[in-house]
Image 1 (cartoon, rainbow, N blue to C red):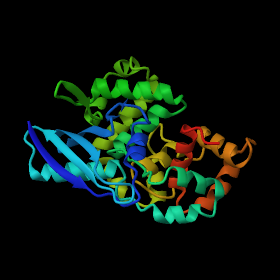
Image 2: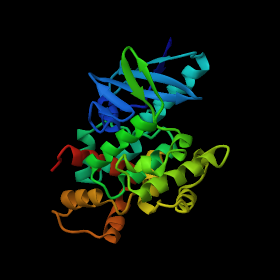
Image 3: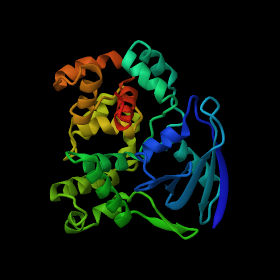
Image 4: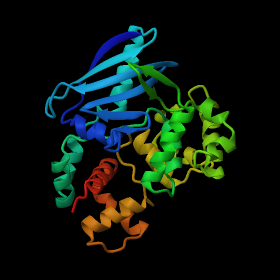
Length: 305
């Protein structure tokens, strides 16, 4: 088993614990991602090779640097470079937070949240396919229920490999979910309709040379237009794909009940908001609504008042 090392230098400020913690939902393990004793691990799928990335912070929030150890069979230097790029993407290492922080200074509530969670970068899904499937899993479900289904799906259909006696999983490939029986997917607590949606997304991912990854080249409005053609994908799901899969800075998941409750609690003393009012209110954060959303969710998870 080959072992190589790489270095990732995120754009400061970068808080490794907050960012990796967001990716694992502040749990020791969350499907394909784990965080324990300040070490983040993810099994990567690099050109069909399974590569375990072990990531540690060796810098600071102001001068961040990540040491990445890569393990896998038949690793070449090109594989290491691609794996390091994946780590940087997944942890949002190259995001520029300064313009968003500047905007937040004009919003006392958001400014306080930014100060508390300074250096939190937005983690990404490894692929558009992964982000879409996870968004489908999360539709109209409590977070804990969606987490259980996510873990079951990954550990049932995801490629896996054992390193030092520990088994790690990566996200299932489209062909694995497409070939699964609908009844098998339903046994993982998926509704039949969601199982059909996921297989439709797998078909789309396999339908073109670059599959769903071609969405990276399109503007936001065209991405949303194409995603809405997929069965099971509505505006809420499309916005989350813009956020988690494509890293677009001004997406806003209108219709998210948790987001609506959070804004109502932090800005309107708990008064009820409808989607039209929330959308209009969110314009104060444009063109950085993605980051406002992620920081508000982080504050909510931390019980901010």
